[in-house]
Amino acid sequence: MDISELRRDMTAIEEGHWVTSEDLPDLGDIRIRVRGMSSGPARQMFDRMASKVPAKDRNADGSLRNGDMTRVMKAVLKRHLFMEIDGLTEAGKPMKAEQVIERIDDPALEPLIELVIRAVSVVDARRESMTEDAAGN
Image (cartoon, rainbow, N blue to C red; front, side):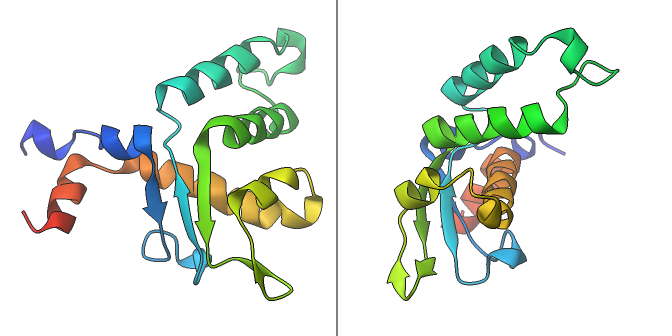
């Protein structure tokens, strides 16, 4: 295997990539454009916020508890990762990413937020070879 097959698609991670049902079947007709968590500003914000959680409020292994992880991820999604959404409607009217972000703490939207977080992981996992394959190279 050539090392080039393992290289991350840093363009998608930094500039964003459309994730579709081909990547996440649960999306249905929705497309989500997100950056990868490995993008510099997102990683820095996550690390900065996570470092402020005291050790006494963490899991035994030092990782963030679910509540803190969710709070930090939502903040990073709002600021750096969630760029656009297409195909999502409310009462028949198209919704924009900004409208979803405004309601990111609404428990009723938790399944959608989970899909956005999964989309971020898809972008982080993209390889340069995937981009080349899509371009027909």
